[in-house]
Image (cartoon, rainbow, N blue to C red; front, side):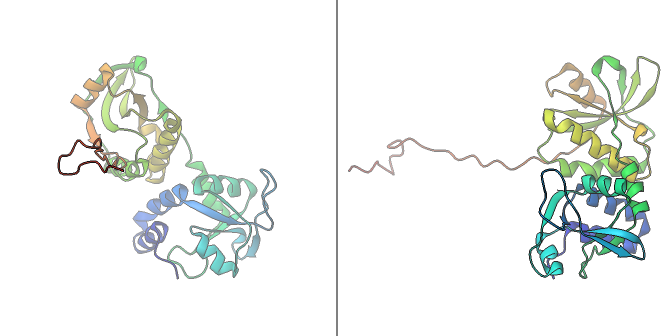
Length: 259
């Protein structure tokens, strides 16, 4: 049996405490999954292996290539794709998901109704532009589930942005609410960040409309106001090793070698 994976741990925790079920779905949507195919992909077309079960028709997928090879007793055609994409594809075809069969901690069969529910959670937050803001203030009256959802999702966005701050806002149209301000996000990652946060909220039982999102440069004037009033969340950054290279002959204790 392979080592325990984050998906295993999330599934076992959900089995022990139903209130943690949303975390399992969150891990599943973020995971890379290996979908077993009948034949090698032809362009963008794939033909999954489909099993007939008491829960209906299901496709086979695993979160490790080794698990897939063990269950299939050898290498087999497969497609690697995100859980997010796989859930949407299978739900649209009326097919469920047999996940990590073979005695693993996350072994389960997810019927198509469960996948359709998860697919419904894949909604983006409303992205706000600075021009729509009238007032920024300290956040107040925050649901604990909102803080937990943000706190648990941001570590998975390592290196995609520099800072994240939660603030209370008033808009020029008179509406009020809460805004997650993300500073110095990589432009190609902004859509993915918004999608990930929306999923975290919906899977925690909150409407995605409970939070808006905005992306600003760290040096922007509005960023100063956001930091002054906001509640900050840490976004991990990849470790960077800096090595000092001395010019040959600059260290008296290490004279250059003459050839």
